[in-house]
Image (cartoon, rainbow, N blue to C red; front, top):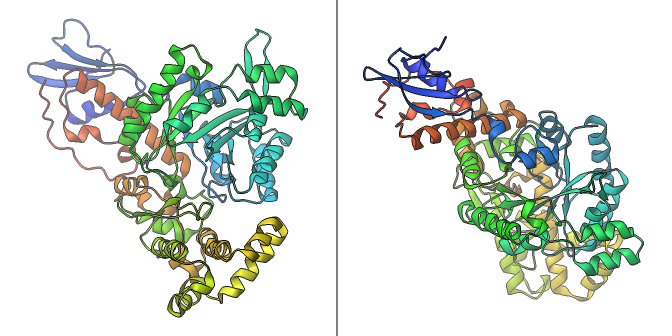
Amino acid sequence: MSTVRFDRAGVRDAIADLDRPCFVVRRAGRVGAGNEPPEPGTGHEVVAVAPPAGPRQLGSRAFVRRHGLKAAYMAGSMAGGISSVDLVVTLARRGLLASFGAAGLPSERIERAVRELRTKLPTASWACNLIHDPARPRNEKDAVDLYLRHGVSCVEASAFLAPTVDLVRYRATGLRRARDGNVVCDHRVVAKVSQAGTARFFLRPAPPELITRLLRQDALTEEQARLAGMVALADDITVEADSAGHTDRRPLVTQLPLLLALRDREALDGRPGGVVGIGAAGGIGTPQAAFGAFAMGADYVVTGSVNQSCVEAGTSAAVKALLAQADIGDCAMAPAADMFEMGVDVQVLKRGTLFAGRAAWLYRLYREHGGLDDLCAGDRARLEGELFHRPLEAVWSQVAAYLGRHDPERAERARDDPRLRMALVFRWYLGSSSRWAVAGDRDRQGDFQIWCGPAMGAFNAWVRGTPWSTPDNRHAAMVAEALLSGAAHHGRLAQLRLAGVRLPSWCAASSLDAVIASQEAPPALEHAL
């Protein structure tokens, strides 16, 4: 029997039952809704129908199939292990893709994480970050060696400005022909880019000169080399808009359409990049933002900042507490440790820490002076007292000892180049600040470098007044599922609006509100059709 209800709770429940269709009806001037069509002869006029719109209907089925997932969702990598093994495991077990934050970690730490992930997730899909570091290309090679040795089947490639021989090596060594003759790649690549220009080479096959180089090194078979010229360098490309860490702070509403159009031109020209998935990252902190990305055509969405405040994130309780207090405007740009001399910035949290201002001051000193010996007494005293907590000579000794073990050539150059020596000393502070944050060093809270984008503030506003206001109650899988189900809910509301149904504001209550928020009687239903 059809059950159409006209009371407010009944209408709300029918709209919120996303796994079933929703029928909005009118009878005798009253508006009702149900999940089955009204029976003939009851006087019900069907004025709008919305099909099932659950989280599994969001995004691209190809992305879901390619990675063996339940939904088109990914938790992007956060460097230094902030995207921890625990975070990857908890999401993978729910059928969601997550990437371990390998960037900035020593090889032995990455290897331990990979071993643990393979043990805990023998069949589930997961990824590891592969970051390009032009100053230390050996790190990229070592990471690829490790991933190939341990059978890591998916990497999230970030900071690549051009194809590299080791990225191509990872991709091409996974290529083979299936029995049906189709090309299969056992090494999936999810590229992270912020500009259309960078995305272009990921949409194309690997450069022939790099394939030839690998052939000469016996790193590829002839068959792998042939197949490498037939597939795009990436399976998926994430458009990273205004996000935490390295970012151009470009709006998602402008960047995502650019990448989608670029991919579609590849498809029209019959190139292999036409099947590459395009995902959206940056600002995904609420169901409305996730729905907006899907509505613009994103094949999947990627979260970052919001995961950093969850229980499973590999950072300190002090950092999570600061993140949970952030508003949308509590972000600032600060010099990046890995590209300090180039003037490249990262987006960080400014609330509760002095890092952004101090890091900007270091860059001004670097630009205006030829070396540490050129600093005035006042600047030197402030550096040693407020930032370094030790004499500059002691910092340089520590830096020189590290470089002597890991990069002796640069150590030698720095001894004869006072400006390079100054940059390396300043980079010591920038690099240490993120580690102090992860460790929760109370004596260094003013120097915490916490990568954060505006999605964090949006998320906090969404969950304000609920148990999720407290970081101890935030779990990455629950956050992901609430974002997805909330996005699906907003998708249904959009379908009804397009059908001419005007909905009161209480209908937009998200899945989170329905599950954990305090329930209040909704205002009077004021539909107008």
